Length: 253
Ligand SMILES: NC(=O)c1ccc[n+]([C@@H]2O[C@H](COP(=O)([O-])OP(=O)(O)OC[C@H]3O[C@@H](n4cnc5c(N)ncnc54)[C@H](OP(=O)(O)O)[C@@H]3O)[C@@H](O)[C@H]2O)c1
Image (cartoon, rainbow, N blue to C red; front, top):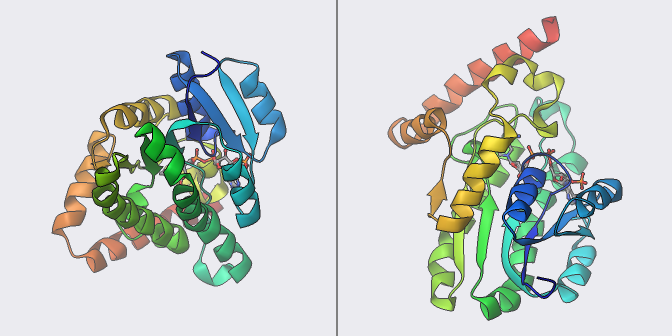
């Protein structure tokens, strides 16, 4: 088992990435779990066949170094991500830039650097995007932009890399109960958040089957289907009303 190729999962110190790592390790996969919080990585290592990799995705130099020392991989799950859930006008460029680097720049760099490794194993890449990349998402505008990038990037890459024997799939969940959504702005929408265990199980299934785009959950599938029919400007307007009300409700609680 020690020499088994590993599956790299980014953002495995909490939420969806951690749960995917645990579920995949439980079925015998050898997992390389990355994140910044060393105590969380150490706790994961104590549980099963999981190796921790301290990696700050905000640093391109750190990514280059990590990729140069990467063990043989059979797959990569690009899950790490951050958001900024507030008026765009209340943000700043430093926050925007960190979001774009973590959600987009790091993933593009990782895929490029790991191509030879994945080509060797005829491996697979699962990109964790979001329903918020299929529909406009006012009050998470930069986040929605990064996830739309990852969906188009992933689906484009899928067609190119199939000729290299590498499978690429995109996973686009709706709201999940994790640290990311454990913030005042999301409080009013808490009841609509899916449990992380079931979303992780759907992500593991997507990793196995590698459909081009997997949207887990009946309601999310409906929204994704509607997004193909309705004008994006209409969806943006409706979403703005829903999120503005949710933010007002959260503030008045
Ligand atoms: N929660 C939702 O409602 C939802 C919905 C749709 C899609 N998603 C997507 O699902 C993915 C996981 O989100 P989550 O909800 O599980 O969030 P989470 O619980 O906040 O976990 C985020 C993970 O990303 C890692 N991370 C953040 N910044 C990093 C950096 N600079 N370098 C390295 N790792 C970094 C964190 O690890 P460290 O802090 O230890 O570095 C953590 O492990 C994200 O891509 C998110 O966009 C989430």
